[in-house]
Length: 574
Image 1 (cartoon, rainbow, N blue to C red):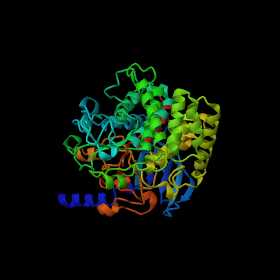
Image 2: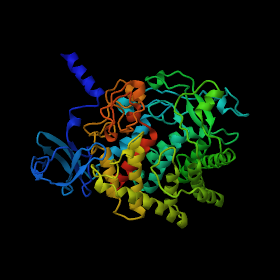
Image 3: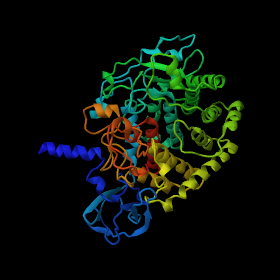
Image 4: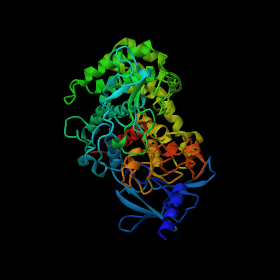
């Protein structure tokens, strides 16, 4: 009998099914803020006059009505939007519909645990040190990849560092489900989180994530950034200022713990995009850490490194990272993540912006003006102009600030146009192109951050609720019923494509990690013969370790989760 039960569970897992996911009540499984909107969506069952809301004492507090009926443009399914915003008293509530029920929480600290866990996750994926039980609990592990003997790959060779040279390049974060470290994604992740830090410095001064550095005088978020910035500094060739594109093994490691990995590690080819991203985040960090007592030498080092990197990039504008070409000309072949990007206008804009804010030198502003975008986009590692726009919005330059705000306003107002037509009452999630690789980070969380910028600088009180609606979607009010952050909600990913979580012998994955999300391209299906539950864009999600197309984690997606959850927490944090 036990084997039959286990076999049934395995089949349900393969199909992405569970008893809980069949529940038609879709809501934010983490928490609602008392004074903000509280929408619930009922999937395909007409709940009119059937819904009952009870408080913790079992008393009926309301019998809400349907305020709108929507039809999915992707599946044709009918959804019923219910507004519970009249409930403002903090507490735990139960919502019941026929045989189905669910619960939701209202709290001034609704996003606090999400904020601390998503940031603490970066400590748990640090490379090159023991992860201590004192700070990690059951997720403690032995040091892997000390990276004190890293080989200069032939593609990265220079006169000062010929092929085979051994360098030391320790620390940093594991980038995604694999164990490698990539300059472009690290720089982008740092840049986005530092943007949010700059907007909420008082909040972060109080936020304690219980990491080894928490007792010093520096905010924990800056301590965490420093752990990765220290690694990034080692990725610059001191002889010319160019920055290696990545530190990697030739091939992805198996699903084993970091300390069991034994492939050699290489720094591979300098790239113009990696070098410019490095220049941008170093200049940004140098500015924000000026006068820091815990890292007194960092700011001047980062300033010098940034300027030198920018100069190298201007001399090498066509040094794009092309892994196929590298493998045709050099050995060993490299088959890990490419992070290929064959245009650098956006990287120039971001780097020049940050260098101008750091140095005040007119040449950098002139370069930024030449590369300033005319529109705002969903941002990720390959599209970084938006980080430059955020920085100008924070600056004292009235001209560039006004231009940036106008670009941001058009973008945010366009997002709002979708809400009244959406079947989950959010700017995100009602269109086919909302879904794809890493969509929950770049297309859901990042626009929510943009809307909080708009709420702060353009129209206070107008955009915040829409940012929250995106996060409600992320946390369970969606087509699959999943809360897409590990360790949160009553239906969340248990099998992310993440080597540590899959290999540590602990049933629950590392908490606070955002998975990529529904991806109708299903790039992993051909290789793994995976069975997705649906080809419908917003339902094309599979909670299986092998599903790297929908269930992998990555630092840039988590950076976006840190940004939005911390900023929302900051709005009520005391």
